[in-house]
Length: 121
Image 1 (cartoon, one colour):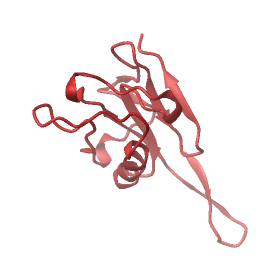
Image 2 (cartoon, one colour):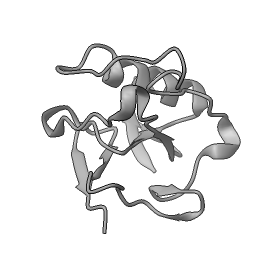
Image 3 (tube, one colour):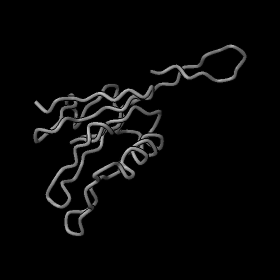
């Protein structure tokens, strides 16, 4: 849960947040890994709902340095097919604690701007 300041007198209101994770397709036979932008095997964002998560992910993956191509046979590098039911209380993938893969860390992008790397093994 994150505290969000809103102009309601002097009150602070809290808005529950969840974590939404997308995985990277190895389009063109490789995975992108750009630690300075929090790009890795999985990308997890903290968000209020799925719409907010998709918007955050789109900003993160839009034109990071060295972005690999989408592939006509393998598909798009990133998929934004998530809905509200995909949100979890902690960063995870497929019901397990979040980890990277193929020697590439996963990255968690928190609402407060922090980016945390999660080792693959």
